[in-house]
Amino acid sequence: MAKYETMFITRTDIPDEEIEKLVAQMEGVISHADGKIEKVEKMGRRRLAYSVQKQREGLYLLFVFEGNPNRRQSQNPQPRHLRRLPRPPRVGKHHLRVKGVKGYGV
Picture (spheres, rainbow, N blue to C red):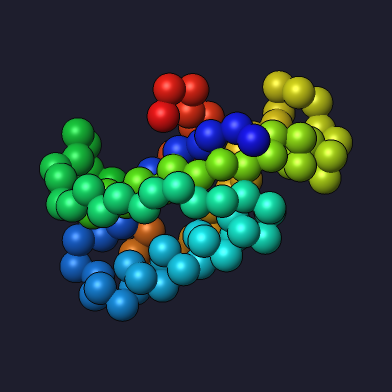
């Protein structure tokens, strides 16, 4: 299994229930893909380098998980240069950005 990191940046004015809902939704997506979450880190409120959707600050959530790198490829027969990590679920209007990377030294 390979290790991956996914960073969610959400609006700062959302309630804690919405954040817990996002965490549960992401855990469901990862477990459905035969993965295992190692860590969920709420990194807190930080200033963005540039405004995103008229927001200057965001709430950062980091997910570190293990997943099978071959699972996605077998389900999606795209050319190698077009393959990407599974898209994380959208939260709707609270969602600003998501970035997923394969972590080598996590």
